[in-house]
Length: 491
Image 1 (cartoon, rainbow, N blue to C red):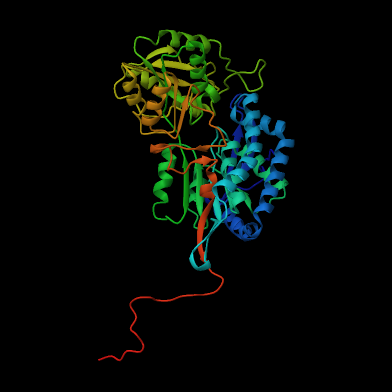
Image 2: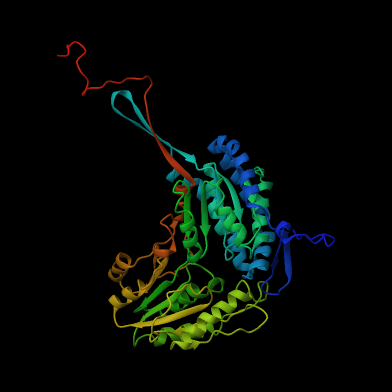
């Protein structure tokens, strides 16, 4: 897995040099992987060459190949989870759940393709038939994120392969080792090398891949800012599918919760799992002004017990570090901006080790902050907003350009109905965290959280396109109006 550069390589023009990408363990700073950046055009060309043979195989053949892939991952689950924990810094227990999701995605995608992309035949008049079948797009590019470097790109790749597409996958430059491991598992399952291609690189390689004329679409999970740039880039290529799964400034409303301890636990799970590096993490805690005291006390009591440590610590931590020092610095800058604007810290955001990207879980009251940034703070920061009534809570929940996840804890069934009907989000929960969406249901958001192409179970929808056919056993046609009678003479 670990490859060294040839130290004897001569110095030449930088434009001709293939750069090296290095991945380090955020918990320790140790280098765990290095590799040369790839060529987007070459990878797309390889995928295009391999795609026709893959698409020509039966649906059953492709499903069997993906089931072999699931078995390969199952056999390597501990090794895979250890790599994910080392490369992302997330606790080992959480990395194991991610590998489990990679395995489970295959059968979920098999069911989804059967439900969302079935072959249908309908009888029409005069013995004709209407047929609806689906075709793969061709070569799809997949750009993966670093927070779930195996599960989230796999959620695009597996449905795409089942549908008959070839894939060029560029993992995040922060988690290339996990991306390489994932692709190797596909190849070990005897899925042809050309059908799943790996492109190592950073933003430059990502932009190059998105710009390749040889791709038929791009499937992206990442920030709203990057998604907007891709949307502009694809504006003049409407024939190419573009599926954007972006971030969120997600509201968690706690309203008259009878079990305060349970509500506090849900808040902590929503905001701080994966050190807050989830697109569905709660960013804003909306509470009734004057009645928030017991809930905030319970949250703070839980935060005081949260273990922040390296992935393999004993006892296991609830949180590891964020992905790198640059990410930690950015979260700290956003935190300081909230304080400078009048935010009142309830639990401070601390940096226990300056040289490493560990952050402690933070809680801040921003009710009095004017011009609060509508931003996704991708780290362990939860903002408290006090409102006067439930209508104001809904207004505040919608006070964002994003629209990914929202949750109501407490309240009556009638209040939840009102919440569900009026809150703009693609995932709306009751008495559950904002994060942890099920893979056997659609997933995605509105606003700048996505472009209305839900992934998870509905990924089948953007992995193939429907073809409608009117069919008859023999040609039969007549023109009933608009023709002159051949037996009549013209004047």
